[in-house]
Amino acid sequence: MAFENNVSTKIKLRDLQLPVDYKHIAMLFNSIEPGTTTVEALEDEDRHIPQKSTLTLNDQGLLTGFGRIRVLAENTNGQVIGYGASWRAPWSDPGELASTFCVHPDYQRQGVGKLILSSLENWAASHQASILLSEVKDWIPGSLPFAQKHGFLVDAHIFELRLNLNQLDLTKFADPIHRLKDSSITFVTLADIAGEASEKKLYDLYVETSKDNPGQSGNLPPFSEWRKEALPENCSQEKWVFIALDCDRFVGVSTLFSTDETGVLYTDYTGVDRHYRGRGIAKALKLLSIQAAIDEGAHTMTTDTEAGNESMQRLNRGLGYMPGKGHYRIRKLLISEV
Image (tube, rainbow, N blue to C red; front, side, top):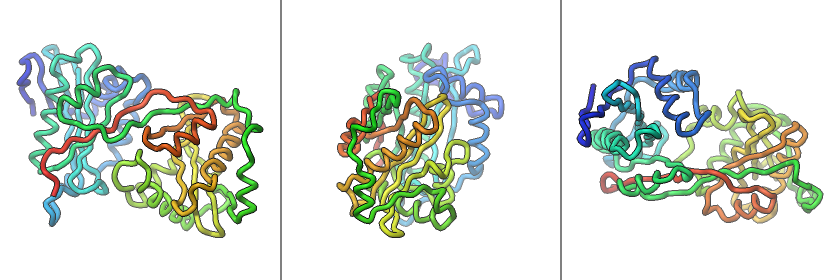
């Protein structure tokens, strides 16, 4: 299927032709941010995604189920210059669709992005979706103004923080770990209490703490899907999942992931039960993960934080984290919410 460009007849949209188009998608993402993805990663992702659409409307008239559309933009020479996708995961909030769109840097500001976004919105409208979600980089000039011009509003600003472990003096921090142990809070790793029962208690903690996380969008997926994301075999280890306990109750967690950068570890998630906040548990968990990273020979730790999460901002800055690049999470109301 081809879509004629209503901006310029020199550009057209077409459906994907797989597997050959994996290389074009990877090229586009990497032209904007080198190292973003690979052909193999895209192929692997598709293998875990249902091929059959199950989109339908619930009793409140809101979109549910799974489905997606993907398109590529070509110039007259058949060169792929843009990509767009919109999809809905079964666990997404009713009515919502996620999306991504990108244009090769050499072809930006020529109407390609507008054409791609228009096709995604037409598809969304055909399924009566009410909200379209996406992300734009905060370090690409014009990306946020483009989205705002086309009706998107900023929902959150999430950016990277980096900590230079070689310049960190852990002795200057108070010892909250022993202090908390004296108050009945103990610390273990998932390796100490490995098993599905512990993983399900950890999942329940994620579900509860994510509700208060301004960087979290929507609900968490079911346990089996969450496990793939929170405990991925390729970059996580049970000994890197630090858990705070009150007797046998899970009250806090902080997890580490390996990264493609040698000597760099990433804090994927930190959360504390709302009834236990303000007692230094998050700081203790962070310090445990920092010590583990140092023991692993890491020179840098990274994490992501939402600009509005003031308590986590204070904690990370107090530990010496410095802000870096990030993205805006954006949303557009397509039809009136029921």
